[in-house]
Length: 204
Length: 190
Picture 1 (cartoon, each protein chain N blue to C red):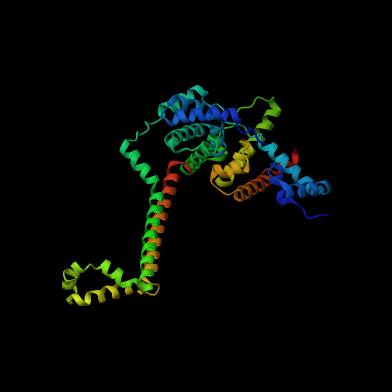
Picture 2: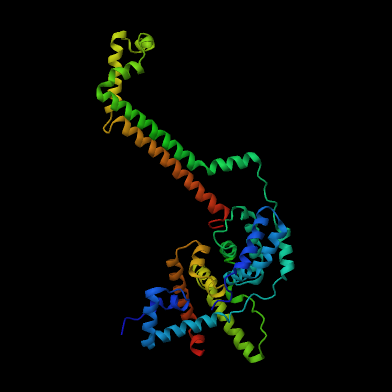
């Protein structure tokens, strides 16, 4: 004989067993008097539970409904501004997704620029980033250097952007932005759960 | 076994209409919802608390909470389960508040229509059953009440109480084992 199926008898009794497990329990019950007796005890218990009296002396339904109606508070009416705020709050994840896509686009473009520099198009890009008309003005004052050395500074700055930090500035900034967006999303999710719980959709 | 069946599709449809109207502030539609679900809600709370007066107050409180939170209700799960969830939580709140005040042994006996001897015997047995159910831990009692007195499926109980199905099974198993111990003399006599 197979092993007793007492663990599953309650579930079987409630009609919640399906598939292979159901067949296994039925096959076992056909041969096992012990488990059949156990199942019978469950049935007797269920019948006994029904002998517990229902609540007596209740208020008639109409009166009960009227009493509830009298106790119902006015439901606060949302203003257009509150509704707009609510919609905005609901759309926060979409906004975060858009911000993430925007940041990715920025890094993609900067990657293309860096690639162009590495393909020896650097001087053109540096010239574009540091126009000749401005080379002698504020940058020279800030760094206290002559106009001639400004193109060198541009090259150095771009190299720093390209290779700064252990992972490179691009990767580091990308990771930081991802973490920030992730944290914002987690905060939103937490407040969403809190609101859901508080409002009773989850557990009023 | 179960005393109630799951709501029919027709009832669900008209429930949905009533819910939509009530969500827009229609108190009459909500009154109809209260009328439809009053019996089940009072029964759940009564089986949880063990006192009819307390159960009626708690049931009214449950419906008031349901009214307040109705705009956030989404008909992904039946309204009945949603309102039972609120009722169960109200009952647990009541039990916490009234723990010192409600003495299980001192609760009044319910009326019976049986003959004198059978009535006495049946009344005593029913009363012992009620006390045994009330002696269960609230979490197991809630699962047992929803299963045995309201006939909810495991999935519905899990949704109603916000717990996994495995927990429903283990709590139900625990409750039944406890009841079999405390009601052993009556089980053997049957």
